[in-house]
Length: 76
Image (cartoon, rainbow, N blue to C red; front, side, top):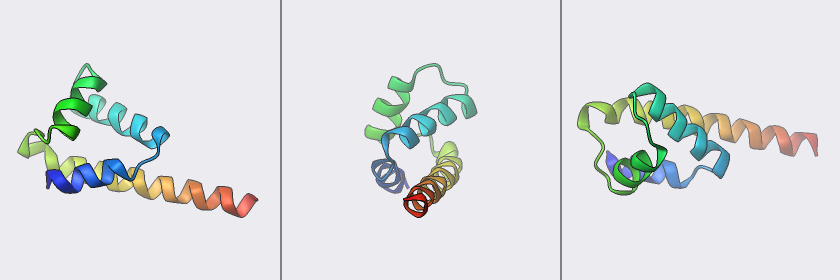
């Protein structure tokens, strides 16, 4: 499941990545985005009990990202 999380994170634009890191910090009471990114996302050391929740969070953020992109294209 950690590979799926890494793939989803790599599909995020910068704004969505920031939002994802902020969500994880808030949801799991963490204090450092660097820790989350380095150890959890890049390092693949996400606690197993948190993985399912992270997948749901990332899916929702990616869905929102897609809607924002479509909205921008429609306005052009």
